[in-house]
Image (tube, rainbow, N blue to C red; front, side, top):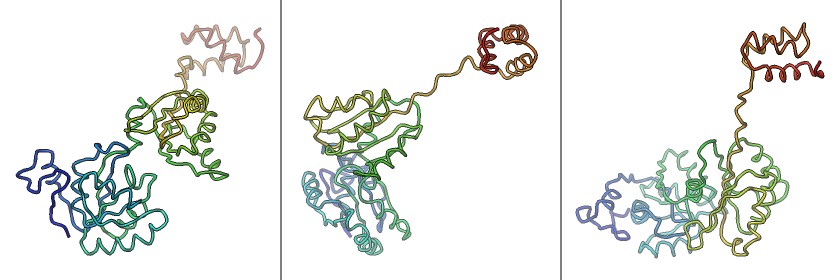
Length: 311
């Protein structure tokens, strides 16, 4: 295993490190553990000191694309052994990683961008490591999901993470029908190649707001909140908007207005008794006198109960 090494501006000795770098070094980093490391989603300056330290400390880095990760590490001056772990080999690669962890190695797991295991490869590996009785350590950081949620301005209501819908066909239709029926906000991810299809699907939600983010944290970042029905036109208004990956937050449906006119239980009971013997207007007038509830509200409730024309 590696000793505690120099990494990307973190001094080798805590005595010569600044206070932030020292905080990264002072954390306990157990051997034989898988470290799930979030990496930038666009702006390389968003890497955390702790992520840099773990990437340098690790005996090997499991990554989605070795070429992409090697380029990322070069930007930080980090050298490491890379292990390819992607959707096509995750099951097979897991066995090799488990063997290395059992031998006491520290393995870092990264995706091409953001947090591994969140609509990215890595979830199966994490599950297998935990099932084997080994430790999985999160090293949190950049995420398109939390980045967009933080600026969407959703103060109330639950939000459900959906991620990517199936790419096409009946599977996509079934998934969309399932998710749109939820009484929560929705977090969706989409590629530029399928964003128009998603916009057409979202149009069925009408005036419900959606916050859309593209090129998050990059030079041409764009974030907008608009009605779901207007998303397709917004995309068509600028050809550049079909570039980059998309994160979307469909806001929770508006809560139904509070029913301030709902009758108290006692008023409903009195009205029902009077309606059994009296015409609507008379029953409403007497019920109002007895309960203090406005006569108009009682009259409308009486009409609904009797479904008759005014007498």
